[in-house]
Image (cartoon, rainbow over all chains, first blue to last red; front, side):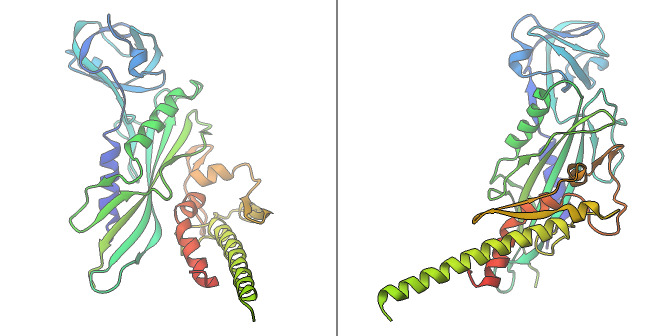
Length: 223
Length: 121
């Protein structure tokens, strides 16, 4: 039978794998004003002001914690909240904003603040399910929509916002099939594919960019 | 009756059904956005003063182009559920957010539904 809970969790799990920018495993140091490298380029790697990054393999936990990029140059990223740490093999990545407001839940891990991006989830069950094949165990089809509203740091232009949105579009291409319980199928639609909607200004301070992912689910009718 | 007249009658019948299908789909799409639809699952526009709901209209610009629109400035905020204080809480007893989105997602079903009604399916 139609199980929207399962479908929503499958879409959420996919969204959590978003990767917008990464240094890969390289030599990185932390400075009082952010992060630094001596080779390669943060610009080439896709980092942009307003993105939410996390570090891995830094000794000091605060350098691994999520923080928002203020400025970017080839060899330096400016962020608040770093502690000086000498160079070592580490990774910086930008994925789905780390402040997340899942549907009907409080934002985690902290309340949103306009200096940080955050993401809000909405699941729309969409067109009512109907049986599309005949007889016992006929296929029920529903057309839900999974929406992620990206709340982005204002007055930083469109680049970071578009990078997040484009990353999500690439993560949910039309015809992508996700694993759901045996007998069911979940596929991103191609007749009305994923899209990015109008950028809105939230008067609280954020720029809001909704990304919508229509998908089709099919499941055998138990009758 | 001649072969030519049969073909001409068939052409006229097809043209009539095309027009019926196009107009029917446009009207049903407007209904889905404005009032909600059991076909698409769209909730329709929420109502406080009724200005937003009443503002939606349809304009047949060309024989095959229909423009469904509103001139209410806060319509995009209602569509997305984003208001002056962040995400909106729905207070209206009718309607909801994302009616345009859900209508778009359910559009193939609108076409299918109207096609059956006009005998084009």
